Length: 456
Image 1 (cartoon, rainbow, N blue to C red):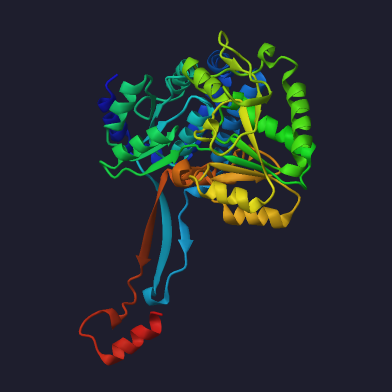
Image 2 (cartoon, rainbow, N blue to C red; image 1 turned 180 degrees about the horizontal axis):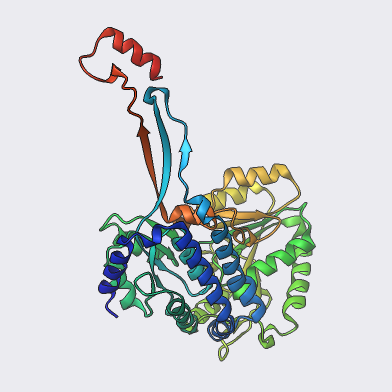
């Protein structure tokens, strides 16, 4: 594929103004939703092959969330496209002021392998809603899903409007050498830095959805049984390959034993006596990541799990004890079904620990104390999170999802996604029936007094 020619073809199509029509955008969003529904079986099959996701998990975390986001965008896009009128200073009398949302032009969406469908389709839908042309680059690590995404896009849109580029590192590098008007990247911190570096050549604005070590705190006043269940869900969903999964757990020393008992019971109830025999338990994406996560377990005290199956690339849900901040597993994002547990007696200690490291993408707190809640929210900077639950804060179109610091920049979902892919153009429309003379030379003391009245 001639990537440079494809970008130019999209740029020419964007110049026609077709994508700027709000009704056109709505129609394309609905077409995308309809095409996804037609391909749902193929999507499920592809997710099963790449990650061993069950049909339920595929719909709950990939297809269903994507369709919900697309329908939300389609219901509101026409209203969002209208000019937003704002107050005008008295000094600018008589005039109107408004903000006009306009598309950037040709956007690039680069998506990851862990939620390969949702994390491709949702930013694409946001780009469409804002009126952009778009080239999508899905991950080479999830080839089956990438192939289905290409089929869906080819069935729904002409390539001069929306196109898919498949491939690996060579295609990524070639895409990043092109001049785009916006780049949206989801993936690792290291690749995110490269994307930002390449974008700087043309001063292209970027959104970076990255990751990091997201902490989870369980205070002594928490509902331990419910906390155990919800943490197990958030940690082991997609076999821990979730950017907002709880990466490590700080639990109050007084409730540690109770929590371990409840957590062990939850894991057994969710995945059975032998999780590696559970046909619905997802696998690691490839051998490289399988080996990496297994190496993080070695030498640590395993409370539950710790076993793996190289032939299926599955690692059993694992809980580790006797972990310290210096343990190898605390030096990198785990991105697998392994939860290290540490204790605390004073929340100030854990706040100091978290704030001494890079800002996390997510943070989770289990407590019934509003005082404790305020303390954590006021003193730890993170992308987003939950109180008394995990990961579900991203499953809404009414709040932005994104990181801060090394966990990313920018956000999307709903109106926030529309805004991400839109330039906000400020316009002042001045009327001609009156022209106040005070701004024109020659200046005088009288004119200065008038200016001081109007401009303050």
